[in-house]
Length: 278
Image 1 (cartoon, rainbow, N blue to C red):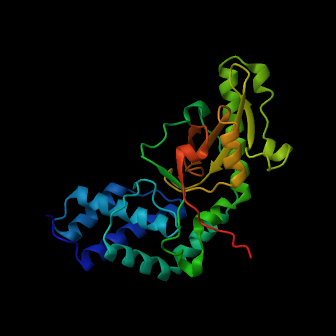
Image 2 (cartoon, rainbow, N blue to C red):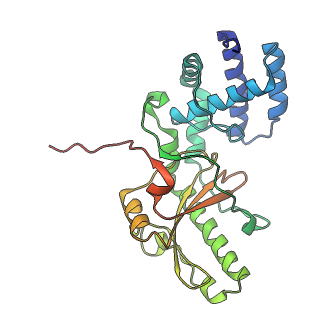
Image 3 (tube, rainbow, N blue to C red):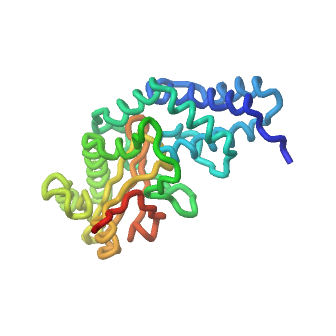
């Protein structure tokens, strides 16, 4: 059995991860491999795979604390309690990082221009069940600020993500030589209001409706997102037509994956709020 990580090793690993996270929020280029090699020299013997997994553990902890993670490190759970405690303490004390995260979550967004929008759709991550919203086993840091919810309320980001999906749908239908259908693609959240349970009305090449709910984040594809009761109901009632487009890394390298049918059948739904009635 591998030797347990010491406090000094964990401290060094968290410091390395947070240094990279600072670059993420500044939108600066950095070299993950170089950072990992430097860390391995400090650790003196830990193999690269073990260091990689520890960074993935940190990503999982940040998500539990409702904070963005580094997209290149896929969240990996089953971490040691010491790691959680050090990450939480460092994050709570790092006022500069918390401020950058708040500014990043609130920042206006523009619809990105890409070379070939039809190549922006990717396969859904290979996970058994993805979380839409995570139960707050651990409270958010920084006086209970939920940075993921803060970003989800960024109307500018949501609007830009929906416009990006409209552009994709028009391009998809034009490529299929369905020009008339392409001309009917509509961002209904803007033209009819946001109470329909979906954001974009598009079409299959057969002419059947495609009802698209768009969830956009500037963070990684593992980031939980939030759904409403109405969205859940419409996705179930009109399952054959309903598709959820999860747009991720929107500000840097926008991509998305698609899941058709009831949201509750494709994702694990965890309640984050309850209404208590007298």
